[in-house]
Length: 253
Image 1 (spheres, helix red, strand yellow):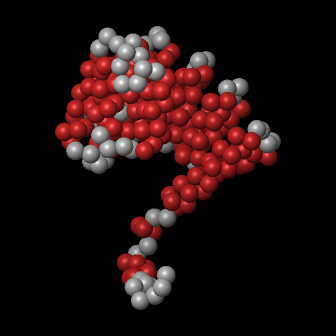
Image 2: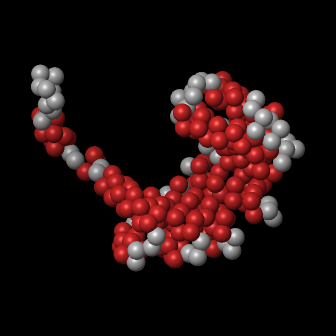
Image 3: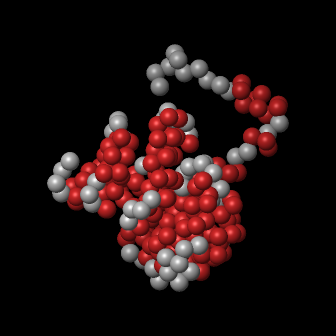
């Protein structure tokens, strides 16, 4: 391996974007054997994408199992806290029943970093069992916990978090504000587009404006998608729609 841990850390990020074949084996090896805790943590975190793909049955079940087992061993093992936390975050995507207890254990920790990691994993779980825990952390003093709770509220599509998230658009912490902007675009609901547009008119920094524009697009997409419901059409309407099927084979499209 390369002697410089910084290079290995950057390489993990670049390889993740490339989706290089065999990457999971490289990451498993780094997680288990690298001398630098930041590299081990980066590798553990990067394995999350494979858990996600495994849940969608996009990688072989055997591969998924090997990765899950290694991450479970890491969380339960004696490695540094950051490495174990990143492994837990990666397991957030997993439907393995053991993960629930691990998230609960991390969430009840007196260490804010573990609570933040638990919330990140909750957001990835698509499991409504965590809704109450997420809601209660939206008022937390620790900004990293507040930020992860805010993100998780969007990921879990917690509609009743809406009013609180609108309040968090005024949060003193940039990351919390950014998370609130994006989560509101996922959840939608009453007053959301107005709140985002108002924030845009106040014209904060360029980065926030760019995020707000993206969020308003995402909101429009999600709300448009939600309103198109095939159940609203009866058989006759669908029959009429089918008559308009066009065969483009003969045309130059």
